[in-house]
Image (tube, rainbow, N blue to C red; front, side, top):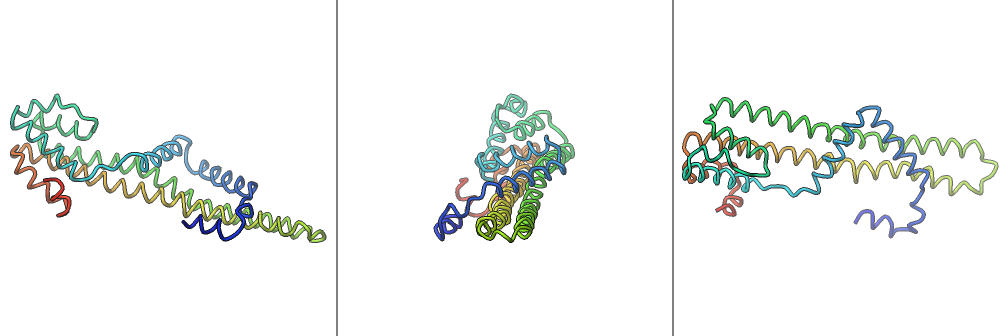
Amino acid sequence: MALGALFLSQAPETLVAIPSLMFVLGGTCATTLLTFSIKEVWQAIRSGIRAFAVKDIPARDAVAAVVHLAAISRKEGIMALEKIQTPNPVLKKAAQLIAHNADPVLIRDTLNIEILSLRRHRGIGISVFSRLALYAPAMGMIGTLIWLAQMLTDLKTPDPLGPDMVVAMMASLYGCLLSTLLFLPIAGKLKTRSRQDEYRLHIIFEGACCILENNNPKLVYEKLSSFLTSKERAGAR
């Protein structure tokens, strides 16, 4: 809506300045590549795409998955969990730990390692997009100053003054738009998904400990339901 209002307020072609856009994008990417390695930048881009493309798994689904493990454990024995097939690698690891009757301390340590790995992986993406959000407005301002300096050195021919001023101003505009409407939202989305994933890790590994103590599915659910809001509990029943 904001972009729509911007374009409707005047002729759209007045907001298009290819040289300004190329300068801002090129300068922002160059400074980012000086800060991070190509591998880290590519990893951040993939994380950003997945954050929006991959559907978030509700906490109640994580609870339901653990309760399902408890039901299998109670019906077929904990060794049956070793053959569980699931696309979720963390849930698979939790099932393996339960099947081998792992010590709760080992489960806690595994949880901490998984959380540290998640934070490191997502932290790279958050750092890259946060830096992009920082560099884009700065490059826009630099572009504006460069074009203004060029204009001031040739005031004898005022005819191209208007178009040159547009190019100069568009550099700052593009920098601010890229930062506010693209890079910062992606960094924020990665932070949100990271918190949500950590929360699900706690549910899964807390559920693993609970199954080892008592594999009654109802008791496992009652304990894990503490992670859910009242609305989520109603939807999980």
